[in-house]
Image (tube, rainbow, N blue to C red; front, side):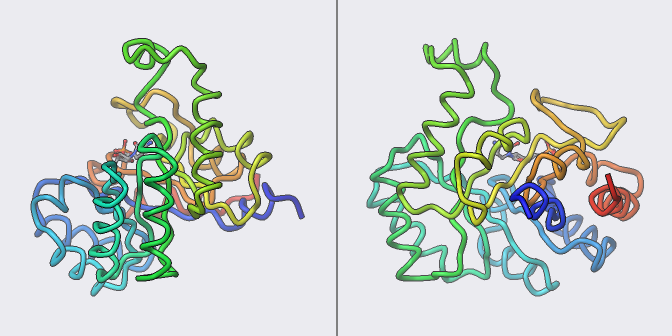
Amino acid sequence: MTDTLQSKNLCQLILALDIEEKADALALLKQTGPELQWVKIGLQMFTKYGPDYVRQVADLGKDIFLDLKLHDIPNTVAKAVESLASLPIKMLTIHTCGGQEMMRWAVKAQQNAKPDLQLLGVTVLTSMDRNSLDQLAIQQSLAKRVDLLAALAQEAGMNGLVCSPHEVVNLRQAFASHFTLVTPGVRPTGSAAGDQKRIMTPAQAREVGSDYIVVGRPIYKADDPAAAVAAINEELRAKS
Ligand code: C5P
C-alpha cells in the first residue's frame, strides 16, 4: 500500500474552534457529539481561557491539538513545551522558521516530559502567498521554502507538519509515512474561502494524503454545525 492510500483511509477531521465565548464552544462540542473527535484550540481561546479550558474540552472526550505556534529562543520554547506537557493535549505546534536549534530543544523537552505528544512544525501559513513572501523579501519559491523548513523539522526530530494540502504530495514523497501531515486551508464545496488562499476540499485533501484536515469557520459559522461536521466526515469516508 502506498503512503497516499494508507493516509486516505485515516484522514480525520479536526475542528478549529476559534470563537469568542467558552460557553458557546463547549455547547457546540456537546452538540456535535462523537462525530467529532479532534478539536484544535488556538491562540484566541487559549489566551482568553487558559489551561482550564483545555481540560474542560478534554473532559468531553475530545483529543486536543493545541495550536500555539511557539516561536522564541530555544530555552524559552523548551520550557513552554515542558509546561504545556502537563495538559491533556496530543498535538502542539512550533514555528519551523524559529530554526533547527529551537526545534531540537523543543523535541528534547517533549521526549522528557510527554513522549506521546506530537510536535508539529508550521512552515508557511496557508494565508500567505507569493505576494506575502515578497513583502518579507523572501525570494525563494513558496514550494522551496516549505521543503527547506520541512527538512529542518524532520532532522530536528519533529513528528510532522502543518502545511497546505497543496504541499502534501511533495512532502509525502520526501518524508516517511509516519511523518504526520495536518492540513488547514480546507473548504467544503460551496463554503467561503475567507482569508485562506491555497485551499482544497476535504475529499481532495484526503486524496493527496493528508492525515488530518483542519476546518474552522465552515463548521462553527454554519447554521447547523453538527450537520456540517457530519457532511465533512461523509466526504472523508466516501470512496473516490
Ligand atoms: O476557519 P479556518 O478553517 O480558515 O481555520 C483554519 C485554522 O487553521 C485556523 O485556526 C488557523 O489559525 C489554522 N492554521 C492555518 N494555516 C496554517 C496553520 C494553522 O490556517 N498554516
